[in-house]
Image: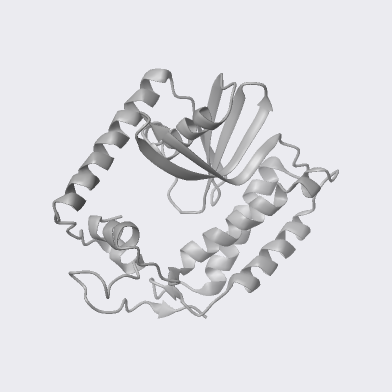
Length: 251
C-alpha cells in the first residue's frame, strides 16, 4: 500500500464499496473456510466437497454487487470463480474430509498493546489451541505468489498476530504461524524466538512513530505509482490520478 492510499483509507477515513474481482473471490473463499470450522460442522463425522462448493456458491451469490471491477481485461468472472473453487479443493484434499482441529476462533478480532502505549487491533483467520500452552495461527492466502520461507520469517502481519495471542491468552508456551497458499496448496510454517518477536515490536513502533510525525507535521504522504494502481479504487482522491479507475465492471 502506498503512503497516500494509507492516508486516504486510515487517516482521512474514506471508505468505498469498490473492490477488485480478486479481492471478492478471496473474501468468498475466506468466508467458506470460516463456515467449515463452525462448531456444528466440526462435530460432523465428515464433510463432502460438494457441500463446501454449495456454500461457496451461496456466499458468492449473496455477496455479489455492482462495484466489483476487473483490472486485467484478459481476466473473467468465471476464471476467478473457478480459482476460488480450486483453492477450496486444494485445502479439502489436504485437510478433509474430517475437520476436527481444536479451533479457538475464526475471524478472531483481538486488541493488544505494545509497550503499554501503542494500541492495535488484528483479525486472525483462524486460531487453534490443540494443547495447553500451544497455539497455531492460520492465515489463508488466495493470491498467485506464495511466500518463501525467508519472506514469511520476516513478515510483520503474523508476528503481530502472535503478539496479540500472547497478550490475550495464557498460558502461551509455543506459537506456530502457518500461511496457507491455497492456489497451489503450499504451506509455510514459522516459529519465532523471543528475540525475533522483540525485533518486530521495535520495527512496528518505528513505523507508527513515523506515521504519527507525518500526521502531526502535515507531512507529505506522497503516492507511489506502480502496477498495483490498477487495483486501487481511490483514483479520484489520489493527488496523482485525479480521475476514476478505468477498470471494467465485473459481470
